[in-house]
Image 1 (cartoon, rainbow, N blue to C red):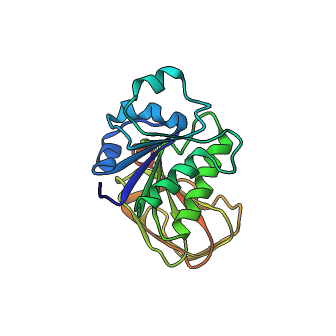
Image 2 (cartoon, one colour):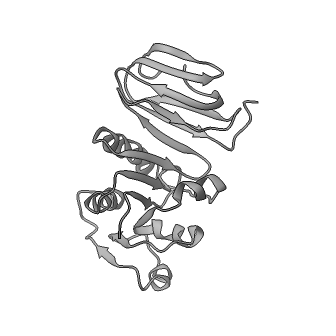
Length: 217
């Protein structure tokens, strides 16, 4: 099987929207433990299912008997999601879609997905975190990003460090080579005027967008 785009099914919130359906077209799929519950919603059959299966009900296992399972002991050094992304990279992934990475019952897991996504981006992978309703993209130095957002939709830039040389264009509140101290809320709740371009000279940030939230109109 060929293809360099992999979707990792994680156990956070996931809503199948038209935008998500288009994003997942021609992707390969790997499920991480309880994230397998999203396979039915997406109408896909993952090629691999990894994890310790501590959050997987028996009926879910019974529903997918043909999917290869790769079990790990609960006492392990990585999350199921990190194991799944490692498997995807081993199989040739260059683009990773972390579906179900946002929200859910475990805030610690959601935060770890942000940090893991950032580390993957710094290794040269193209990364998208999504719940269907909300999308996250790592922003790192020297890599310009364009998010194809509907006009009037909301987005924020969350700094994970001091930011230097932050540029945001085609937005209601543009910035040009701006310096943002760590912890500042200056870049929360901006409004897209169409596709938005981002660039950064130094620092680490996550762009969080709500393409179906047009309350900025």
